[in-house]
Figure 1 (cartoon, rainbow, N blue to C red):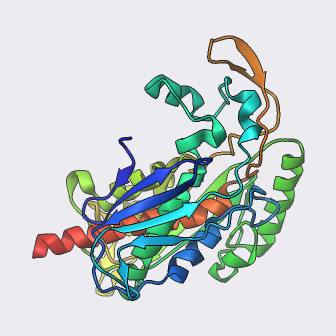
Figure 2 (figure 1 turned 60 degrees about the vertical axis):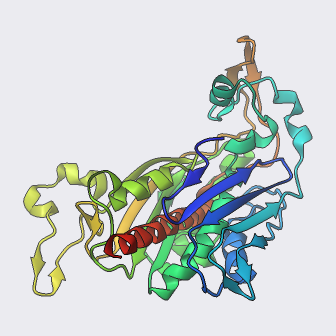
Length: 351
């Protein structure tokens, strides 16, 4: 299946389906001699896995990582790393009644049009479960980036129509929403649970900060670092928009306001979000993404079947009423994959 690989030098290829035997990833271009343990990868997977709280899907998956190759005596060998997570809690029977129906918001219709066949069990390859493989690969990238002093932190700033009023990064892992405002998080949770009881779902906005980057990283013209991050993040099925720095607010700013002026100490503002001309400035990279409401809802909706007949559909099964809390480690992983690939491309340029 084409379209399942990402990166040029640090390259990943994911495989597997939501209700198949498992999901996994092959990572090529890993630096040899890096100390990596299963716990380094497992920590990030535990942040993404289902069943974490009452505002995520109740599907229970241990998401235990199995390292098949590329590690010897606790260090990377430089050969391809093979990582796999076996599925354990599939309830494929939940999808029997809708296997011939196109669920609104899902890739059912488009996959069938492209391939002439589709795995209707939990969306198959189009399922968010595929992102666990990305998180595993991103965890490897993060170990290498951490040694360079680079930190990546994402968090919810808006969900269910409620925005964070403060930004406290110390509370992100202390609330179910992974929000940067503990009080707003509680309000979000209540609203999400109220809507979930009515069979509906909500979306939100996630912000991501990258610190510790030196200036000069990124490729000009087509492979700008913001373009690569945008592709990486938009490749997530739930993400519908992205903005960097001041983002869409720039349309109401004057050039004299938006331009990041400099003095002898560096940049005075960061409206560009840490990237100018597709290359890092040394300031924090900051971007925000729009996360759509979960497509799987238990309310009846209009649709058609595979014969084109008009039908009503209600999606059964176990689904997240809000994807924001679990997409956060995935956004961080995809950002890490872009950054490590860019570092390797820069090293190749200077070799």
